[in-house]
Length: 562
Image (cartoon, rainbow, N blue to C red; front, side):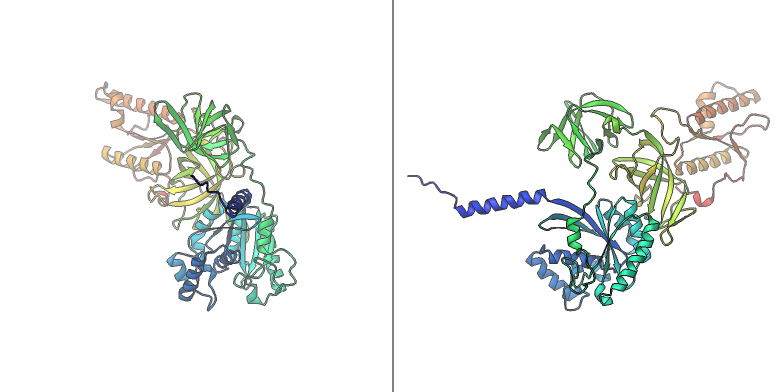
């Protein structure tokens, strides 16, 4: 006789409790925030305090923390909570944060992803990386030191990156005797700076990360402070609702999925909006239109998908669409642009070289770009803009950028995912700058296939022997290419097919010059710079700029960089 085993009531209750907990956790709101500020302001210690006091550490993590605190801690006999975040050997050795560290924790009211970013000026580029996806920024200030240059720089950066919820955490209040006057003085200094920087509002909280004062709950050590503790504020702050779900549909194509001849899909992550089967879409920058046939995912087809989801779209028509293109709702179809104006944060030790050619990666599209000289550079101490010939490490400036191919004209203010970009050095492949698209200057956009508004230039290399003339022309052509310009070297070898029917003598020579001149004029109308390595007499028409032997071609030696 078979025996039917029944699940004990206690097991059913436990399963139901776990399911309820999982469901409740999934429905909690998520807040992404960063801690930033100057070096040694206590960012890592503050995050360690949040993790420790919120009971988000396992027993083995606590045991490791106690052991590490005895070996490498900087807090004496107490736990060095910064070690929960600073895990690199170099970080522990120097006592500073070098790389961005992400930590996850949750309370009964909200889930959190916090990024601990470096305060050292040398690692500002890492701070920008951490801030790029944050909803809120906690700006830490050492109560003993007050507002520093790096405090101002980080505040400017989070403001530029579109983070409008700011918390000014005046840390290490225990080291100034929890003095209210010192707190008020720092807040007043920061408010004056924030007004000049365009920061409209911030919440000031006095804390001590080491002692835990005003971190989880209000501290009796500061009875004069009547606002919320840091965690209370983070749990209840009304973060601006993400507009990505309400914005028009846009998805950058990461990969064309072509497993066999019967399937062609365009894979990517939806940057904003929602898409449904049957919706009309436009493929940019070409502007071709089609309708969505299927929305394919690993778990099966969907009827609709929204912001943040990774999907593969199949279209009803066979159209030209490849990696780097943008699939968007017709009303979100941005005009293609070949010139942009951007805020640029320079991250390389080597200064920016105007007119040098860099790779610009925006969304999933990578194009060649040539940078103009900065229109202005921001002085983070005075918040004034000043002229400059270039950008150095950690400087912030407004720069005009010319592109070799069109990109959809989407501003960073309208879409944080598609309006930001990075610049990559073509020789070293290092990321040298992060940029935010400000605007598209008049004439910067054009329909694909339309002629360029700016004509090319003829640079006529004259005089000297044939071999010397050819060498000078080749050097100039390479120089112009390094600046990101479209260049064609028109010399006797390139003309061979056009002049092989001519004989020798003066009439043939004059006809060669005439044909070369006409070819060069036609090419300049298409926006190409033509380096013409051909000698001509003074009485013959030589349009463009004549460069005689030994004459400077107008470019400084410091710009002769590939």
